[in-house]
Amino acid sequence: MKNIHTCVLSIIEGETGKPQNDVDLKKVAEKEIQSLSSFFKKSKTDIGVLPFIQRNSGLFPNGLWEESADSVCSFLEFISSQIFQPVSSKKLSSVRDDILEKAFCLNVDLKHPSVILSLAALYGCEYAWRVIKPSKKKFNKYNAYNDIMTPFRISELTSKEVDDWCFLTLDVDLSYYVKKNVFFLSSAREVSFSPYLNNRVNKSFSYGVDIQMFEKLDDNERSELLQIIESPYKHLGLKKRL
Image (tube, rainbow, N blue to C red; front, side, top):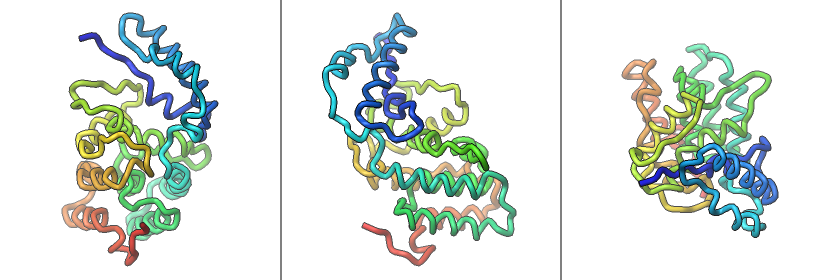
């Protein structure tokens, strides 16, 4: 069977460094699809849908980002200010709770992957830190958001097993993150553009947490943190907003 190359993830992410409107989305789709078909000349690509995109507009007035994107981006901006440099061991628990409380205040689900990755980065997970890419001066919250959401978007766009597709990127840490986490998202593969895909995505991610993210912790510390990740609202003494 002939390989198929698609740039749908690039189209969803866009290139404006901010949420896209329908006009932005159309421009990016045309550019990406034409570039892809020019590069992969012996492979099937998205070129067949280009006429449809060119004839239609208004289908996605707010682009294709998840409805929670603005809140999560604001949360990630806060995260960058907290973890752009290592946090001392004495302050870890305090910063951990600050992260959870900030997410709650911004109405970000405490089991959202951005929250769990932030905790992993706080506790020394290098690949989580590199996916978020925190910086004191030039933090790109939109890039961080799109990278974090990549495995979830893949889960929505394909029902195939991981061996049947390949995610192409030059970002080694992003590739590792995607491969690690798509395995745990089989229950979230229904096509939907509801808030951050839907609650089952958060549950799938938190239940399938890559324990290697916390390999620098001893057994007791890891167990405590995983319990907090499992029941973050209980840890803070709060109730989840509906």
